[in-house]
Image 1 (cartoon, one colour):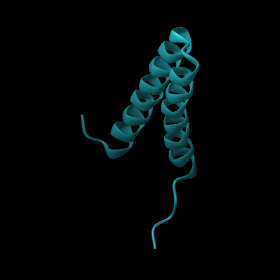
Image 2 (cartoon, rainbow, N blue to C red; image 1 turned 60 degrees about the vertical axis):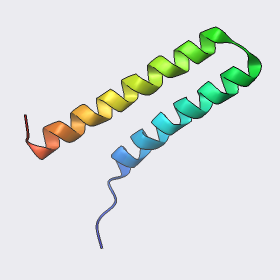
Image 3 (cartoon, rainbow, N blue to C red; image 1 turned 45 degrees about the horizontal axis):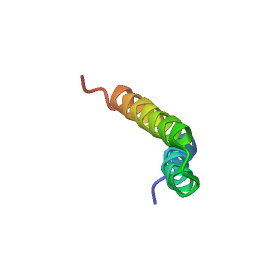
Image 4 (cartoon, helix red, strand yellow; image 1 turned 180 degrees about the vertical axis):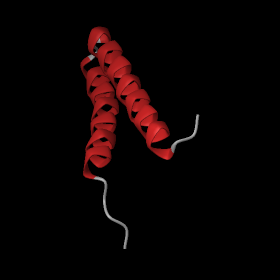
Length: 59
């Protein structure tokens, strides 16, 4: 059984929460929150991918 990587799991859950936040912001009709959650979601996703790339050792 593989060991669960807790920090990466929490980061993935944070990215999912940002995209859920986009849905909530759409329901409220607030364009600024939509933009904020979109930018944060992609920023956290890019951060997670960069960490994964550094750990795997590929360039």
